[in-house]
Length: 167
Image (tube, rainbow, N blue to C red; front, side, top):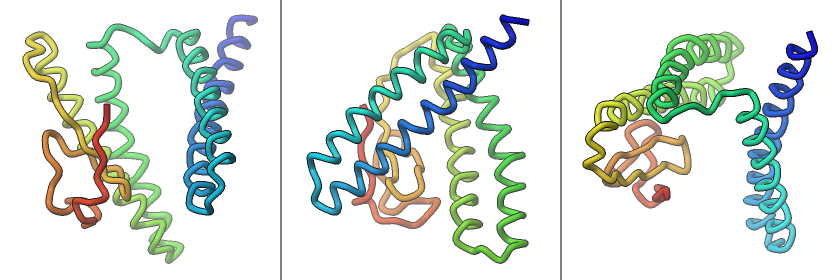
């Protein structure tokens, strides 16, 4: 039973730390917009620290495996999230008459489908490793473009200028 309690604690800690990291990055963006660069820097530094905590918990949970397994697991998760969870979220938002939430959930669902396709493509090229891809992310909806920035985002319609290149 102690192992189960430890596993539960690690899982809760991972979720809390991951959420804190994202929240603090968003707070940093807001502080930058409000011209508080020192506060933004503090938020980003602590966000990185929280991400390290999350990473350590995830590793302790045994969820980080070899690359092929990580890709396969990620493909399965994206497919499930897009097909099951977001459909439910969209239906609830529409039933409540919340068009903004429904739009955000729809964008996320559509982007999750793209993620699944990118994982699938990466799995196909894993052995060959002949390509060094470049990815661009829409800063509005999270759409990931493979290779080049589209004229406009195919999910949310934002212009090419909102895309950024990932490392």
